Image 1 (cartoon, rainbow, N blue to C red):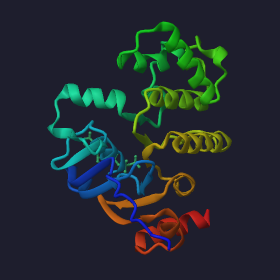
Image 2 (cartoon, helix red, strand yellow):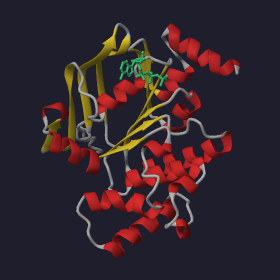
Image 3 (tube, rainbow, N blue to C red):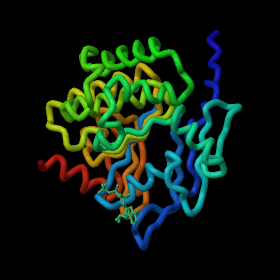
Length: 265
Ligand SMILES: Nc1ncnc2c1ncn2[C@@H]1O[C@H](COP(=O)(O)OP(=O)(O)OP(=O)(O)O)[C@@H](O)[C@H]1O
């Protein structure tokens, strides 16, 4: 006889309850609930100005919401309410547990320190003092993001946009964060560079079992990377569900419009 055991319940690694942040009427987002599970990629899509970037900042501990709370659970024993934590704790979380990939890579890099230094700096900030080890890890990460390790002493400003974005990703992942927040990581790159970068992100997410929230206006990016999609409009979630379901069978009129507009392109 086969006995079916119920799988152990999985705790969300990040859980937001009833969070709001409004700069003015319809400027920001209102009363959102979000659960993000380990290894899950959630895409946040929607019209410009619908509050996606504001939401990402609130979820990553960079912008206190006006209502609600954001809970980070590194494991079932270690549960932290972000905005009830001290500044020092938030800084520590953002150094070690969270990664933040900005749309413009130079916003997330130190342009005037070497590529190796950019990767080594978060390691040093989290306590690693062994220069040889740091350099070795930097070299391995350059390799992992498909930058020739012989460029380790070059400055990021001398890299192409695609290389800078890959370097930003390496800088973020070197400390093995559990949750990575990405804001339009392929925006502004040309199509072939985008495709290569998406492929790399997909591989790394899988290999490192990362939980990711990715803001994108590009449904193709969401289709390729995300398990789930959340569609936002005017600061509200109008639809959420498994990626294929939302894109192949959109229920809300706005999602239908969004999907139809891509098909027409
Ligand atoms: N620091 C701020 N002060 C005042 N208003 C802001 C601030 N940041 C964002 N807003 C406003 O909040 C609203 C949501 O902005 P947000 O950047 O979150 O939208 P978005 O969905 O990410 O847009 P896009 O896709 O164009 O990047 C916009 O109306 C914006 O003008």
